[in-house]
Image (tube, rainbow, N blue to C red; front, side, top):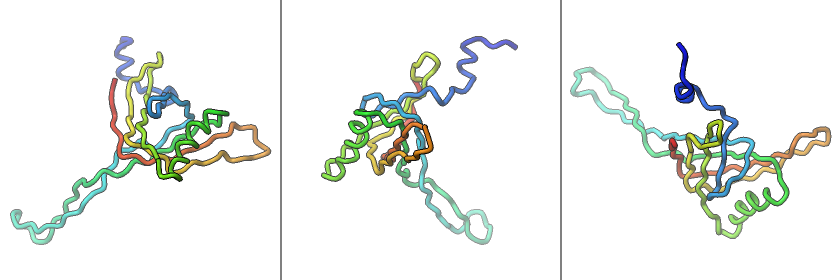
Length: 157
């Protein structure tokens, strides 16, 4: 059975390489984004089974509070942009003026239009890693920033 172009668009997965990252509305190119996770802590309740007539206890597991989100962003070192974007943001923590920012990671279709977006709420940097240096390598210098956030919201365009 032949599929139409619209059916193919709706039924095939999107490739992971076509995405955009925006920090506080500014688009920044990253080579890798990981940790877009929604996860809950759980609470355990143990109760007696009086209504069922079965001897012993019954254990119930219930969702509790939302766990904080830990995200890692990796990008190639670029003169001007790297220091202005990531270093200046994390360095504000030393003067207790750290600004939390919303981050959007947008998965795009073949025309570059956002199809699904992950909104990272109130993110702030917790770690900035310099590239690994190796005199025997000709790889690009990749810096990495770890962020913590209040949560992730997934939106479909």
